[in-house]
Image (tube, rainbow, N blue to C red):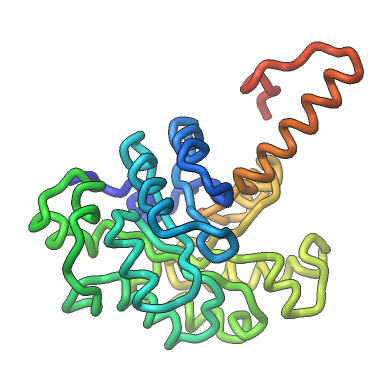
Length: 264
């Protein structure tokens, strides 16, 4: 059975960098799966994915050696069970604002006796290259459970939520958190709130995570101590690249080959 490298890196305190998939495209998922991301999160919360498409995306990412994860639409047993039975290596659960909500997410993701996940579905084992029996025996040790800090209510209970057993990472959603506080997501006034979640995670021994707009911002967040870091999303990356290349073309300059950017 395949091991989940993200689970092991997070446990070892290493940084894992990936991106969000918002384009409804199996082909885009495959392209990104072979380009070095530690993980790819299929975003079912804010994108119009059909369940069948999500299943195909999970399959192609796993087949290409990537780590497919899914942000479920809502923190519910049904949502979590379905994506894990499709073979997802982990879940991201939005808007977790209490200990009880974090505990519910963990229970839904794990088989008894640690959780309440029911047994069923062929793809769950196939995408880990395992037999059904092997998957059942080892899944609890391979599935990554990420909960999101996206609201002022989470901030009020950050230490308690981060300490819930079974949580692997707490991932900050800057836009929603800022909206709940009446602040701008990119303003310096948000930094103390981000630092509060970071400190709570570090004290609890779980990975702090955050969404960053680009690679440079992600690099800065890793230097601050964040360990589960998203670099934009597939739609934004595509838009920025195309816009930049068109500007170069219209200015009469040479088009820079893909992947030939300067090293930091």
